[in-house]
Amino acid sequence: MQQMWLSLLSGLCLRLVLPCSAEEGLEFPNFDGKDRVLDITERNYKKALKRYDLLCLFYHEPVPANKGLQKRFQMTELVLEVIQWVYRGWGERKETVCWCEVCLEEVGSLYVFKDDRVIEFDGELSSDTLVEFLLDVLEDPVEMINSAMELRAFERMEEDIRLIGYFKGEDSYYKAFQEASERFQPYIKFFATFDKSVAKHLSLKMNEVNFYEPFMEEPAILPGRPLSEMDIVEFVNQHRRATLRKLRAENMFETWEDDMDGIHIVAFAEEEDPDGYEFLEILKDVARDNTNNPELSIVWIDPDDFPLLTTYWEKTFKLDLFRPQIGVVNVTDADSVWLDMSNDEDLPTPEELEDWIEDVLSGRVNTEDDDESADDREHPDSYVTEDSSESHDPDEEEDSDD
Ligand SMILES: *[C@@H]1O[C@H](CO)[C@@H](O)[C@H](O)[C@H]1NC(C)=O
Image (cartoon, rainbow, N blue to C red; front, side):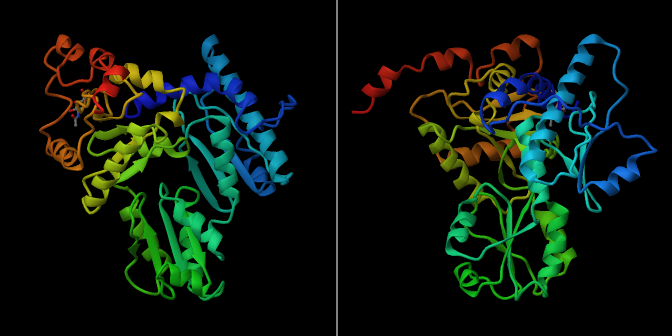
């Protein structure tokens, strides 16, 4: 129930993923049809764990008798075969294998075994997302920053939670940092430098670690120097729910399950669209002003990242996603209320948005008040209804410029 509207959608993705991935994106070669999925039993799992560097396990119920479900099962298995095969070609690690079996009840129970760690995959089950996840897991958990160019790339990653530390070298307090990084790989990015000028640019002192929250201009400095593995782990666990976080295919379930007492504040904005971009800048302002409020976390969804889900969201929430939107969604029943921004010129100011958010956090704006009757739910005034989006007339907009 908890992740109802997201899981419903995964079914949709599964069905559509094959045609997409074969045509574009990662440029998959055609699948050669060989079966590389192992059936794991109590008898063979130990041997398999020893034999392969990286294993990917899908835990599933017995194959269903129902025809439709069976078909989905086969489709999913095929997706996993393709991933596995493509991945093997890229990675040159011939001993790597995915054993992938399908869980039909609960999308998301896919586990990756690396060394002595088990990492849960919490993303959308599509070939490119899973391939990317597996490649990230194979990388070193700490990325080194040695040059001005790497530094610039690091500074551009404003959507990610990042940590960066400055250390003397491999044999130093760097070890604790590295151990900590393994616990969060690949969901939280860890960087380190042994280079004095890079450290200077970032105002890092020796053995200091900085934590960058997404979309914030200034990092937080982890208290204490040097830091133990547990110091770092605890700090990250305390701060990992960002004030503004972007929904991404690679961890969408993790994000969705981390709700605020049963609700999410959700903002839809296309970064490529001028209105969307402007709205996003306002959101960032508000997030920066409220970064110390542990109650507040806004999930930003760029509809461009989820082309297969957009229509579903528009239907479920009765929204026009060609325009920026912000609202409250109840994660149990997907009931929602959206801020009225139907007036074309009027994106809210940061102050107006902050007032609205305050109303949400205090419960004055909520998804329950309009629930008395089913009729109310169809056409409540405060919703952005189809009518209001139709009133959007490009000619009118031009006229209002002068
Ligand atoms: C969410 O919806 C459920 C079911 O309608 C309701 O019981 C619950 O109180 C709602 N939660 C919030 C925070 O509004």
